[in-house]
Image (cartoon, rainbow, N blue to C red; front, side, top):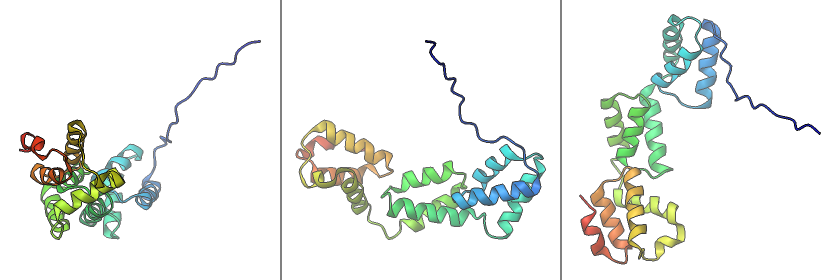
Length: 181
């Protein structure tokens, strides 16, 4: 009996190049799925455009009807990352920059979004989601405390606020004195 060999062909998105109207429809569908910044949309459109000049006209057309608005997209992104993911300012600011939002707009939006926020409480919310009921008990293991410290730094919180929260939940608060900046 011969063994069948199955050759796996990787899934490939359609690479068919699109004319202006089809490119516009593609842009609309992309924006229906997820709010995209202008940079993200431009990147997607460039990959699919038959003529590179069509990209700018499609973006301008989408902008004129209010479908492409970096400020609104950034505000929504920052608000959701704060409220639903409990992430810190630095992380949200870096994510906005990575998505193509210009520096001044990103900073202004993050400051506005976090103006009414207590960072210590946000850290506690983040830890509550990560640790659940384990947050009620003191963290005795220094390795666990160090792991939480690094996770909170990656989440975008400032080291002094992280230290403040971890001192409250740590069994040995003095251990943290060497870790904060």
